[in-house]
Image 1 (spheres, rainbow over the protein chains, first blue to last red):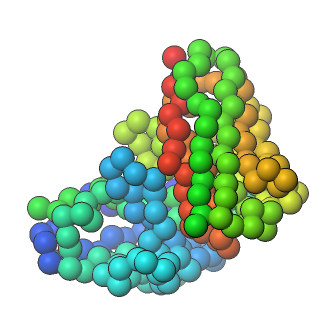
Image 2 (cartoon, rainbow over the protein chains, first blue to last red):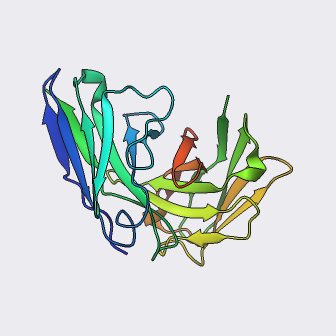
Length: 110
Length: 116
């Protein structure tokens, strides 16, 4: 199994929209639900998006997810300084028999 | 509300052992799988192990297979990670995480393991 590929960094200014991509394979994102996690400094990771495009209760609608084939994307609109942190895609990998995380994307709000 | 409280961890010499524990509350523990995930210094999240609700399905990452053992006690609502033959590259913050269906919806605060 190969780790889903994410850009190492992304940036934007307050109010802008940022899109983070995640390129997986047929054994993970291509076959199973894509999830997104937010990991802010000094905190535990938080589930942001599950089942490709669903938001858990309490997650702002500024966050949205999509998937096409073996790739998934996380869009963050109305960027805020408190969004600064690391974002990881994840999906169950059938070859691994367990979940696999992307390499992570560090989001900077300028 | 769902709570995951972690204990254990600390400093160990290479080759020694440590045990992590995750005590849960606020949900029906026996109906959900549980995971351990770690983050080494300066690195991203790495999944370590998963255990199904009834312990019949257990899988490990290649990096820890044969050295780490995940277990759970549904009567105590706890999940443990026994870490043997520790290596310096096992140094990381370890998180326990509750599985919903195919995602981890609640995470513990993390506990630091240093192998040196």
